[in-house]
Image 1 (cartoon, rainbow, N blue to C red):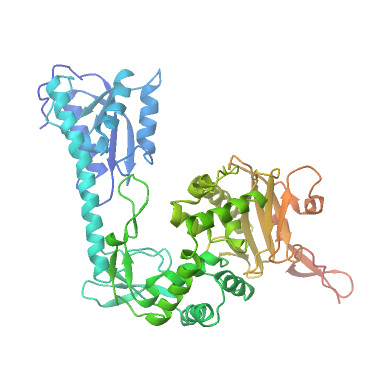
Image 2 (cartoon, one colour; image 1 turned 90 degrees about the vertical axis):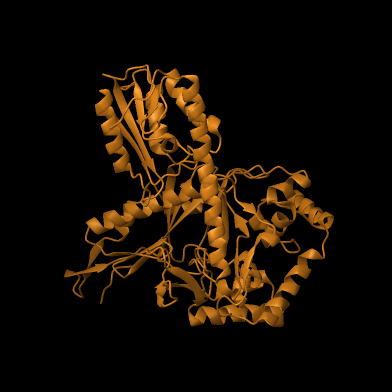
Length: 540
């Protein structure tokens, strides 16, 4: 039975909201158990629970990513809030904030608005006494310390597994595949993209993947070491052959550099090069903190070839001093129309953008060293998420509409292309309207060189990265493959592209609609057929 320990304030007759949270499904106190405990406490105190706020599968170390708690605070601060008490199982369910003042701050916000936060399972009073405040502060500190200690133990455990040769990352990379094994090392089968182990005692190892990809990795090393072909030329060569990288996308010089510099291709498992603890930012760890397991899995290339590639790669950048590469960057930003890491990679005679990031911590730090302030939207996580959401929304709307009309729709592995009725291939892309340093607002479009869809659908997003402005539908042959068009948004500046512009994706339903073929006598045949943009009706 619940007891009101040390309380001097009655809660009887008050209306309450309950807040429940758990991080994983394996926790002892699931949300259902918390609700049962809160219900027992409420019945004992004569409280009526009128609202429930639930964050399932959400970490408690930060407010970010906890929509239920955010909504609770919003409702509690409203002038017409429907409850005057918030019931929480214990202090840790309210949050394991790393700063105890943050946890107290959110509780204070509620109390200031006339809403009292009560922890049902804690053995201290809710009357605001000095002893209760002291115990609550201690509990908050213990909750935060628990997360820090758990994070440290998990990280150490992952490092130990990596030392034993087990893979701790996600996608292993081009030419490699993940294989699931049980606790005895018995192989259970390969793991496909986005598949994960379901049994806690199972482990993941890495083995050579598709034989064609393995052969291509070895060919890349041969081109680079024996034939002296640079990373940019290798990427262009692979794209010209129509070969995609591990993500089904075109190659760029950085992809080639990653293959040439990653020790996993000689069978060494390297872990903890970077780490992210709790809510902190990702950080690059010193070499001494890396976990390395030599011979963890079969190599794709021999060590001598890898070391030769490493010598060539490092000599191309390390023989330049910081002053020299900053001088090149300064000259580049003064002469280039568009300044970005991608353009730096493309510019002849310039070190790679990643070189600047490694030397100075980030590309923006290098910009600051030469007195340059980027005046364009950074392609940060929020831009990527907005672009990806717009792209997936367009694909989802189109797929649902086509399916409702009786069409069969298949999705590509990278979820950017659909195939309608095994006939029409439609690829979707998002382009942002960006403001550059010495040019007005512009957007870019390029026909993909590593695939050949029938239609390329381009969604234009404004600088707010919100709803799409319009849609461009380019049929095959309307754009030069591989050539990037940089178009101004000024009226009349891209009239030749206006014929491909549409307000929404409904045009795709018209382009995929079935039409009847004309028979030799000019009458329409009863057999339906598909007609595509730019094709005439079949006739005898």
